Image 1 (tube, helix red, strand yellow):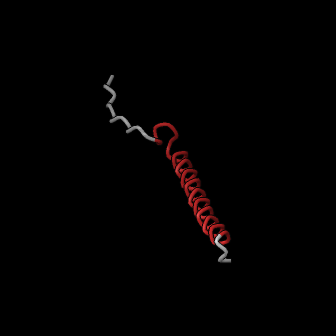
Image 2 (tube, helix red, strand yellow; image 1 turned 90 degrees about the vertical axis):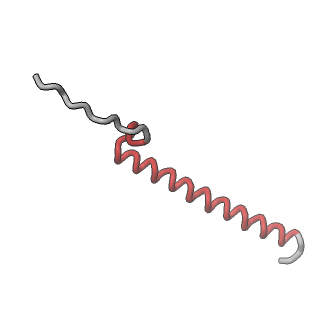
Image 3 (cartoon, one colour; image 1 turned 90 degrees about the horizontal axis):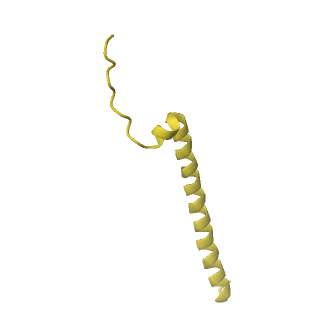
Length: 59
Protein backbone atom coordinates (compact mmCIF):
# COMPACT_ATOMS: atom_id res chain seq x y z
CA UNK A 1 0.00 0.00 0.00
CA UNK A 2 1.61 3.30 -1.06
CA UNK A 3 1.94 6.09 1.47
CA UNK A 4 -0.43 9.02 1.01
CA UNK A 5 1.41 12.20 0.08
CA UNK A 6 0.92 14.96 2.64
CA UNK A 7 -0.29 18.33 1.41
CA UNK A 8 0.54 21.70 2.94
CA UNK A 9 -2.11 22.94 5.38
CA UNK A 10 -4.39 25.65 4.07
CA UNK A 11 -3.74 29.06 5.68
CA UNK A 12 -6.36 30.16 8.18
CA UNK A 13 -8.83 32.72 6.98
CA UNK A 14 -12.29 33.02 5.49
CA UNK A 15 -11.56 30.27 2.96
CA UNK A 16 -10.97 27.74 5.76
CA UNK A 17 -14.39 28.30 7.30
CA UNK A 18 -16.61 29.27 4.39
CA UNK A 19 -15.03 28.01 1.17
CA UNK A 20 -14.21 30.19 -1.81
CA UNK A 21 -17.74 31.21 -2.92
CA UNK A 22 -18.99 31.98 0.57
CA UNK A 23 -15.85 33.96 1.39
CA UNK A 24 -16.51 36.13 -1.66
CA UNK A 25 -20.08 36.76 -0.53
CA UNK A 26 -18.88 37.62 3.00
CA UNK A 27 -16.46 40.14 1.50
CA UNK A 28 -19.31 41.59 -0.59
CA UNK A 29 -21.49 41.95 2.52
CA UNK A 30 -18.75 43.84 4.39
CA UNK A 31 -18.06 46.03 1.34
CA UNK A 32 -21.76 46.87 1.21
CA UNK A 33 -21.88 47.67 4.91
CA UNK A 34 -18.84 49.92 4.58
CA UNK A 35 -20.44 51.75 1.63
CA UNK A 36 -23.66 52.31 3.59
CA UNK A 37 -21.66 53.56 6.59
CA UNK A 38 -19.80 56.08 4.41
CA UNK A 39 -23.04 57.39 2.88
CA UNK A 40 -24.69 57.71 6.32
CA UNK A 41 -21.69 59.55 7.78
CA UNK A 42 -21.58 61.96 4.83
CA UNK A 43 -25.32 62.62 5.18
CA UNK A 44 -24.88 63.37 8.90
CA UNK A 45 -21.93 65.65 8.11
CA UNK A 46 -23.95 67.61 5.52
CA UNK A 47 -27.00 67.75 7.81
CA UNK A 48 -24.82 69.15 10.59
CA UNK A 49 -23.56 71.93 8.36
CA UNK A 50 -27.09 72.68 7.16
CA UNK A 51 -28.41 72.89 10.74
CA UNK A 52 -25.47 75.06 11.82
CA UNK A 53 -26.02 77.45 8.91
CA UNK A 54 -29.77 77.58 9.63
CA UNK A 55 -29.12 78.24 13.33
CA UNK A 56 -26.68 81.04 12.46
CA UNK A 57 -29.33 82.67 10.26
CA UNK A 58 -27.46 82.22 7.00
CA UNK A 59 -30.31 80.40 5.25
